[in-house]
Image (cartoon, rainbow, N blue to C red):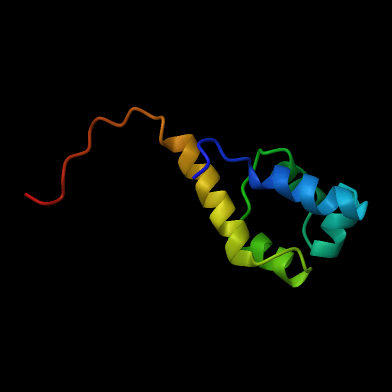
Length: 92
């Protein structure tokens, strides 16, 4: 497992949109999402939701489950370093 995975928006930009020569506005229109929504994803300020993942799949940009897994891996990598002390075992 990658210790610090890339934000999936970075992957979407570098591996999908850039090679296709698509800008944010054109890609957002093709995906049926607001330009600001896609821009926030590409800049790592928002995650890829299940709805966006499905839109990416329908647009031919991989499987929805892959995008969700990339987002989950990124989210977990951001939380794991947190110092969570107030948790006790559920088994008594």
